[in-house]
Image (cartoon, rainbow, N blue to C red):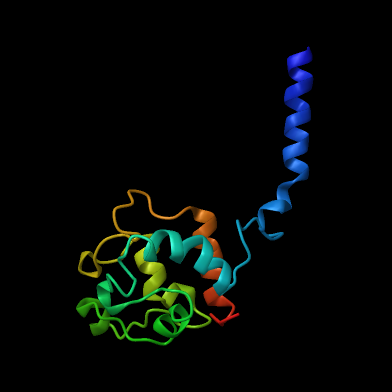
Length: 143
């Protein structure tokens, strides 16, 4: 009985702290803003690995702080198959038409390349994907 009381107390304490993680009321793990995406996704999954940094610069895309928005929004893709479809990296206001979301979820064509981040088997969590999609749908603005 004592163990059940402790488990219930811990569960209640954790649920009471639900908004402490920086998420919003929609269940997102963080606010859908560029600064939060930069910190919680780009810095740790894209830049840290040197893939999309000034050291790596894969796909002619740098996602370092201060330049990621300008390198994404309204920018033509380098991928030949996606370029043939006139896709942009990010289409402000339309996550479903953004090549970034295609690369982060599941590339719709094998010619689009691998799932990002590189080397991940399952990609980003659904919460992170939802936050990025919301940022794009909200206009993909810089904070």
